[in-house]
Amino acid sequence: MHRARQARSLVTAAWAVACALALFVPCCMAAKIIADTSLNGTWSSGTGAVVTGQSFFNLVNNTFNIPKNAGQAYSFTMTSDTTGYWEQAVYQYMRPDTSNPRCFKAQLLWQHGNFTIYPNASLVLDPFRADGRQQLSDSCGDGNDKVQYYAQQEMMQSFYISKYIHYDQPSYKLQLYEFDGTPKPPMYLAFRPPEMYPTEGLHKFMVGLM
Image (cartoon, rainbow, N blue to C red):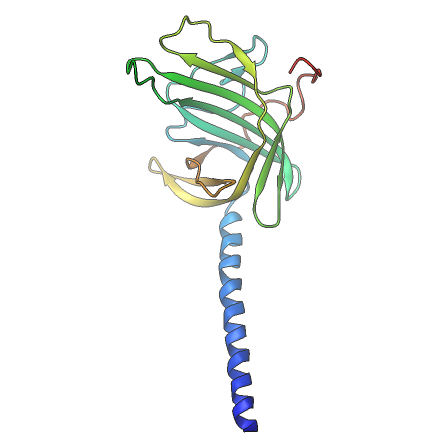
C-alpha cells in the first residue's frame, strides 16, 4: 500500500515537471524570437512606400506628402530595454462609397510619442497629444481636405521580430498584434537609425483648442 502511494507520488511529480517544462520552453522560444534584433529603426509595410519623418508629413506647412502606394510605417528609438520613442505614418484606403464605386476615400495620419514594453511583451504607444495630425481625402469631394488634430494611444498585445528575406534581400520582419490579438500588416526594416522627427513634443497642448 505504502509502495503504491509512493509510486503514485513519483508519477504525479514527474507529470508536474513535464508540464512545467512544456510551459517553460515556448516562453523561452518567444523571448528568443523577440530578441532576433533590436526594435530600433524604421519599419515599413509592403513596398516600403510609406515611411516616417519629413518625407511623409511636413511640420512647417502642416501638409502630408501622399506616397505612391498605401501602407504604414513605425519608427522606434529605444532609450532603455523597455522604453523609448515611436513615430507612426499611415496611408490607407477606406471603404468605398457603394452608391458611386468610382469614388474612394483615404486616410493619412501621423503621430509620435513615448512607448513602454511590458514583461509579457505587450507594447503601449502613448502619443504627444498636441502633435498628431490626420487628413481624410475624398476623390469625389471638393478638394478641400483639411488636416485635423489626431491623438490615439495604441496597445499591442504582443510583437516579435524575425529574420526574413524581403524582395530577395536579407532583412528583418516586425509583426505587431493589436490589443485583441489581430495581426497588423507585417513590416520590414527600412532604415537604421530610424527616419523620424525629434523625440519630443513639438507643439503645446492648449485646453479647449484640441
